[in-house]
Amino acid sequence: MDKALRYLGLAVKAGRLIIGAEDCAKALKCRTRGLLIAASDAGANTLRQAETMAAGKCRLFKTGYAKQELAQAAGRHGPVALALITDDGLAKAFEATARPDRGEQEEQI
Image 1 (cartoon, rainbow, N blue to C red):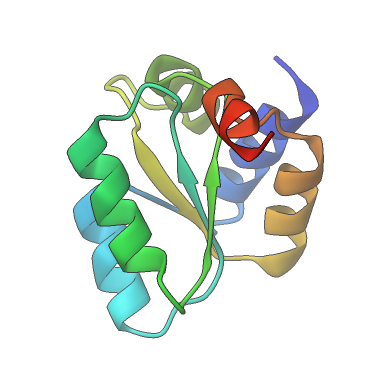
Image 2 (cartoon, helix red, strand yellow):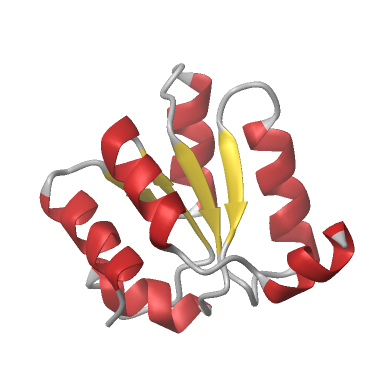
């Protein structure tokens, strides 16, 4: 497991990780700040929903990790398409060490 996924596991242990689109939306409506993480294989509707949720409230980071990789790091059995790290330090550490989505990199070039 790489370093970024270990930060995700640490966020779970610290109680600073919210998993799932509905729970992330509720947290962001309650003015929770952080880093919204999207899996590389998240669907188009999920990504649109994430962009809407994140608009002006938090950063959206489209990772190069699949749903199952995020689920394994978070200790979940089902796939994890969206997650919200609510701790600024853990969010910055994850963002600094995580691999970004390759499709995003190609779009920026």
